[in-house]
Length: 192
Image (cartoon, rainbow, N blue to C red; front, side, top):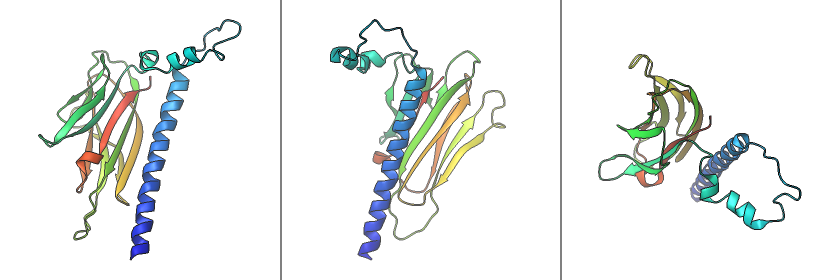
């Protein structure tokens, strides 16, 4: 029994680690894809550590992502609240969903992610899952679409999905099962 518990903990740790590596990989790919090559003066900035660190400071990264939001649980209301958001964002939280509040009908690509840690329940084996659902503006209620649904095979679920949205569309997270609200979060950032 003890060996089974240890392997379960190792599996959870491996699952969380793979999720974090995937998020880091997607962020790096999006960052590299969004940078535009500049003509450098002879000698470049390779030898100047101050120039390199300034490029990756919060001020240097401002403007690279046009919109981003991350949500965590608001324990007082049993709902989601903004944890991190940009100042002039086209993404906002409204009724536990992330809305694209842009007035334009231009389509944009967003990356949505979620990390949900489920409560270890020894008495009931109820199925648990995490589902990302999109509501479109053109056909409300008719065009509610499941983007991705992941059943909980262990204690933790990580999911990610690139989605094309227009102004007025929204995405919400549906969680079935008991989860640890302090350890779970979700969010999105605009890729294009």
